[in-house]
Image 1 (cartoon, rainbow, N blue to C red):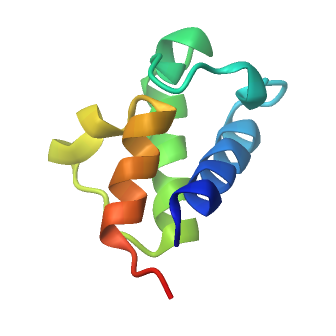
Image 2 (image 1 turned 180 degrees about the horizontal axis):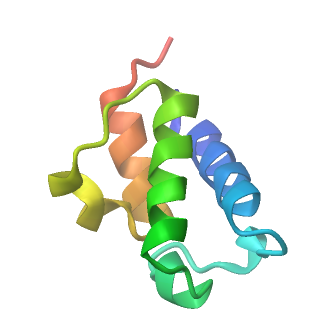
Length: 83
């Protein structure tokens, strides 16, 4: 998966988890968790959905890297093969 594909996927997952979220308005380096006012359950639902859609294991120790669009895209891209 390339970075652009990862960003589209992440935004799709965010809008699924947070209905009404405007993922297109999020700045790449800002905490979407803060911006979208996600509580811990929302964030865990996001992690679970992202894991299901990417097939990646997302350990709790990596959650800090998954709070921004840039961080998520870098994480997903680095752990999936580009074909």
